[in-house]
Length: 411
Length: 90
Image (cartoon, chains in turn brown, orange):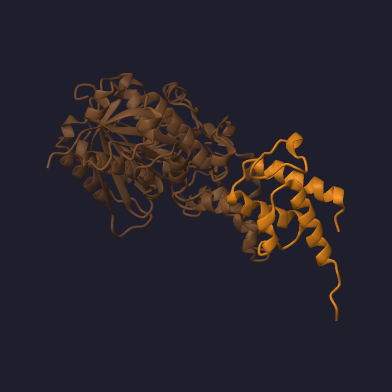
């Protein structure tokens, strides 16, 4: 069976470093860090990590109330990013509303803000009648996907493959599979997340959230750095419009890159610890499925969230496959860990970075952890032409995901 | 017990806060479906909001099916309030 080719024809971003693709990538290119102190979190005395990477300056009322009523922040971000992607791709309303256009958008969980406020209302008297219908629509796990589909009148396939921090990696991978198998011609793919102290707290309780930089937020997170002390939660939404190559060419769509490979696999016996062997299996299988040799990969965008154990495991896995010949960096030092949005937002930065013939460094990597050594860490911006790019995303539950992108000559 | 004016003011506040209806459109003859564009899901949430605002239990009250104009909501809340405060025979 011959699989169809899948290209990226549109991208949209609402991120901690800007609410469109261009401004976000410019900020990453300029070496900005989105981490800041969250004053409202001071009221949580047992929350040790008081920093995060928030989205700023979104005017939610751009979306009509009738559509917005079922949206929490993550759905608003997703809808706005999806509209950016559609505009960039030049899709007509008829194409968006065709049954051949799908929507695969995920998040780690439904709206944590609405979950928390609903439970606060419900609990004193166990009175379910205090919770509105719209709060339920905001809490359900496919809330971002359903709201984007409703807002844009999507009539194709809608999925939400929630897998914690690998959620949007799986969304892009699923969109890629749906198109190459012929199930859909276009899919809006990506992920979303919204900040809440409960989310940061879930990492804090596992000693995985950064807690030593509450007075110096710009210095955290620090992927691969000796002094890293955990991740910093971020929020936002990243949406890529994937399209079958011939459809894209027929309508003279802009082609930003091609998805050439994807794999996801489970570690199998770990719910929180990263596992190098599983990461190696994931990356190797993605390469094999794409028919790409490790030596053909020009750059690896690491998941590297700045947790002590996770960064070491990933560095070991990359070292095993690529040795020290392939440049590697992580964007968590710029954007924070946008969790369900991370795979998509970081993929978008990767695409634009390749288009600019640059490699962006790992922000806040000042003193390399010896346990993360042996790979080619990008510590300052390089000029480089990237043809083949490998992107990693890993998640609680032992979920591993790898995407392969190709630029220029094949598209 | 809320006065008639308080019922109007609190009901209108619900419509402004929950449904983003402009204050100047809140006249007694305005219809929540035809004039404000609310739908059946909004009606469910309007009932949730009115229960909270007036501390009443109305979600299983058959009369909510007849709600349409703002005046009908004001009158309904006043009637419910009256019934709650009417002592029942021993």
